[in-house]
Image 1 (cartoon, rainbow, N blue to C red):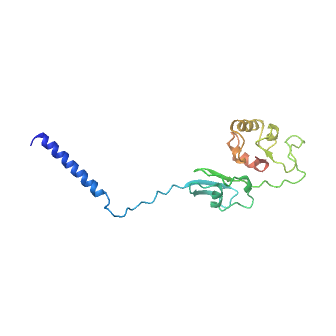
Image 2: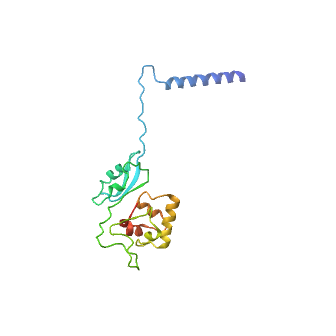
Image 3: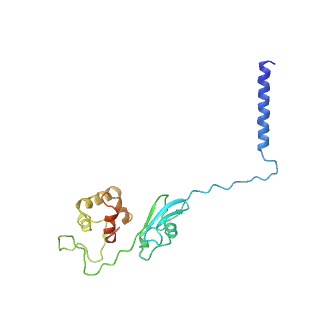
Length: 188
């Protein structure tokens, strides 16, 4: 057999094999086509903390909102400040949702006083707005000195206003301990 006949024979065998595979893989006419279910999207993992019944890490469906995260954690606790959160906001995978508490009632006649002075800086019950406070007002908070007050002002000038009081922990020098000291004295 010559080389040309071997080539032709190989091509014909290849075409026959390909046709046979194509024929076998096609469903028969009139046969039902079985569709596979769409893949299930991966759940989002969200950390819900603060004033909720059961703080913890929860799995939520993609497209979930802050309200869904709070509901997964058993709802708000009795001391929660539910109006401080945007319950309609979308949550992202890996996000921490912090439910703030209501500020404690400050007794009348006990204005905030800067240490070392007898001069009151705030009226009783008045909270310091961390988005508009001056350096002096920020320094009146426990644990906030001149350097940290200036860092708060520089941070908000560079990044815009704080969306929630917990964002204050993004400022260098303010950790959870300092934040816990001032949490009930500040607002946005």
